[in-house]
Amino acid sequence: MSGSSKGIGRYLVEYYLAKGYLVVGCSRSDSSLQHENYRHFPVNVSHEIQVKEMFVQIYRDYGRLDVLLNNAGIASMNHILLTPVETARSILETNFIGTFLLCREAAKLMRKRKFGRIVNLASVAVPLKLEGEAVYAASKAAILSFTQIAAKELASFGITVNAVGPTPIHTDLIKAIPEEKIERLISLQTIPRVGKLEDVSNVIDFFIQPESNFITGQVIYLGGV
Amino acid sequence: MSNEKVSAAIYKAIDAFNEQSGKNHQLKKSPTTILFGKGGQLDSLALVSFIVEVEEKITDDLGVSIALADERALSQKNSPFLTLQTLTQYVSLLIDEHERRPQQQASSIGERQQ
Image 1 (tube, each protein chain N blue to C red):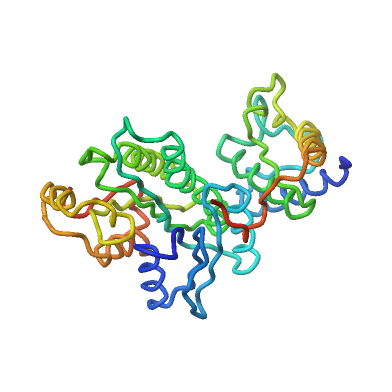
Image 2: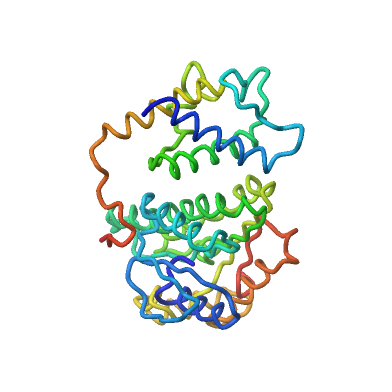
């Protein structure tokens, strides 16, 4: 689980710990979570060496990896005319390069057992083409294309790759966005309500269950988007 | 890095690869074994698996992390993936270059970024 220290990631860690999973999480910062079945790595997901070292540790200590949830993501709402290039680079590095690196290293472990489930976090910002979210939406669009092609390239290794696209959920990611903008965005959904963390885990549960071995390259958007 | 050490690691990679492959796709441990291209024993997907095994064994046994299928490898006039001998030579070259390079910074997973 990347981006595991807060928001959706933190919720998912606790959710899967409660279900009895052994969970490995990573985020730039340390995690306050203490649990006998949780192991945390302070890792920058766009830093290749750090990511590789984390997966070497996972293999040495656990010998396998069944599921990867690529949740780490950052956003910065701004008009493109006012967006600094460093902000754009940072969003692409964390959201896309991070997803790519973790998928690559996870798939190397998963292929050994010819089983793996990868779920990437997309966003409704892509299909809704949200103004002010150009770079963020572009990074998520890259994740979608990557998900669909990775699904093809990894299918023969028994690895499925899918994506879930949440609507706005009250987490740190959207805390800086004015409430009226959130309301306007929600009005574009088929089911106009703020998303719940449980909505995300419900879709992930579907993707990672053993019976979903025929489901790959798919994206499920919440809220009927 | 001596070619013998590199060969030993690559032969271990062959063992791991053969374990996962069918009877008709077993690689022989010989410098003249043709890997990929005309007369090669690997299709493109099998080559991917084999390269991943070699990268892992080089990291595990020789303590060096290399990327075998980089742009330079793919653009070479004579593919390093032609035979086990050309692969061994290419891996040795990459390791030598890696060892001559200054130490990469911020390699510890415990080190924070930004």
